[in-house]
Image 1 (cartoon, one colour):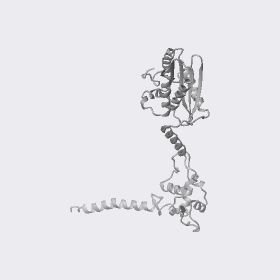
Image 2: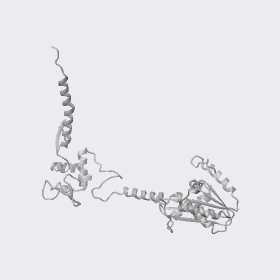
Image 3: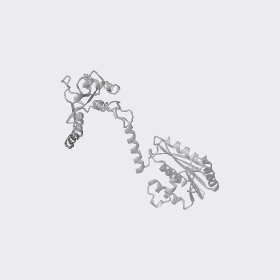
Image 4: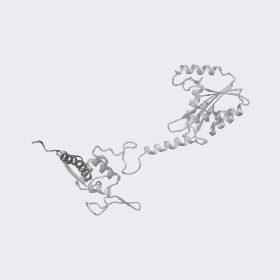
Length: 331
């Protein structure tokens, strides 16, 4: 099957017919070796080998190291198959039928092959080629070929086997393993009692304006204005209500007669209690009440001061410019 054959574009029936034509042309006295690799969602890997000799057949399943790539599982299957047939009485022709085109193409530039598994394959091929003719042939997978389906089943069974020996992971496999572990850690919420989210990377979701969101977020995290650090210890200002203990978030909730769960279940109620008790100075700069259109709006004083200055620069300067450039009307 040439490089023009595409598993994604050609129909399975056509691929199966081409594969059977090649397999049927293999001499009956030749040994056929089918290899495959498998990997599950838990990153457990396995290799499967089905050896079909003129007088017998062998089924081999191997458990590989976790996070081993499917590509290297294919190479491990080929390497193990070559190692096994070295101990057997083999016919003159040996055909290795593999459904991984990348594994076969990997050896086309054999002078640049450097990984341990590939070097072992080349050594075994050199030794076996002195007495046998060895052929590599790519065949498509999952098209109903008995040998390939058997190797695929053995590879899947190898995933569930006990790990007998560990092979050294390559750099790309170590990178994949580290990336997977980091993703799992990222998806696990931290154990901080103030941390609450509904999805990875999410934040405290409150359908309210920015002042309320900031107040509730600072109360939940404990990062209020009166917080300071001394020798690694958190120090809070005294509570403005009782003036006896530090105004920690838990104490502020106690003074308001609330509990920590109320921060997430009723954030607007918590905000109203804090504002009514006059505790907003612990979370923001001076909060002022401005009535606009009959609606009371609470904002930090600095925002209105900046808005007033901006309006003065924009409209006041424009008015002065108009007065300077205006001329009296003619009599």
